Length: 298
Image 1 (cartoon, rainbow, N blue to C red):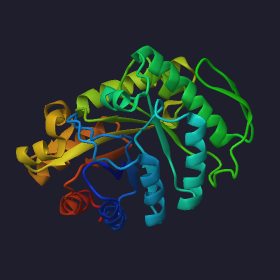
Image 2: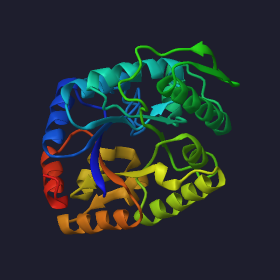
Image 3: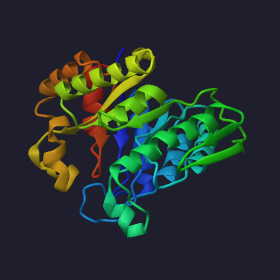
């Protein structure tokens, strides 16, 4: 059965407004809310008005009581994965056992450069992702973890107090077919890709399943989700997504409510286990309510 969530961006908004939005989303019947991980706005304008991800992940956990509290996705280059694992274990306690954690290779060179964080080649970042997700799995799922990698090393490492969940779900975000989807197939409990058409989602999901077969994994063990935008007009699309509006448009629900619901059906037919509405300030809670009523969760 397809479930529905909301991925709420942290840019150009204050924390109090986001907390109230989280409560409204939960009251409307959505089953998932996630944060993103940026230091600058993700519209590539250089605007640095953006709340920090781990802090807002904790706020999400404390301001809700039922939804899964996710992250799509933390950049492996911004924090050592052992530091992230400790934070996620604590947030699992704050949420009463409702936390999910996503990890990606990172992409916004503007942020890396502004903060003096090394931005290596995509191949190196994928290597870091592959090591980082193993570090996360060890520290979140096992009592003691040893790991010897090129980028990360653990020596009898412990993460205590242990998370409330025996197995915190770990996600990989991204659509790279050679490395990202293979890493998801081998190590992840869920895979997320943003702003792709239903046809492209289906194609990438097939690639993921082929990787699952090659590593001896049952594809049903990896939950497949897509983030889509909602814009009732071209102007709304531009206001929400700024400079990247043309890039994300294939994965934005546009038009009438009936047209949006038809598009949602195409994603479901393409194999989406969950559909997340990706929102950015200025938020439109009424649109979320209309959508929730349209898909029958409100």
